[in-house]
Image (tube, rainbow, N blue to C red; front, side, top):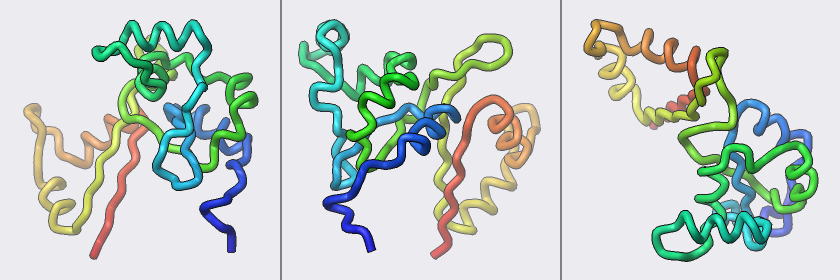
Length: 150
């Protein structure tokens, strides 16, 4: 069994796959919670991060989110050892649709059969059923549905 505290980095190929499907990558430390972003920004990016922030401080995770072009194959290769684990940020991705519009990463966490049943009975303003809304969103964006039954 692997030791999660002293884990090896995630395979670069896996990180690249996540990037390719639109994940906004955030490398995590061994605890699986803390962003591993210390000194990840170049001096120019650090300055831009400070200028963009409301508190005048550097915020690497915000910078990554606000700059979808941050990750590319070369940067993933360079920073691969940071990825003891990985997270993503919901919202805009680096991917675009066929019309050049930004795509968004959305999530819907359904934690019970009762909630799922209620959602399935709902209709949108145009009468579209929940199941059809999910299909529409999946056609436009990447959606992850988590369903937990206790």
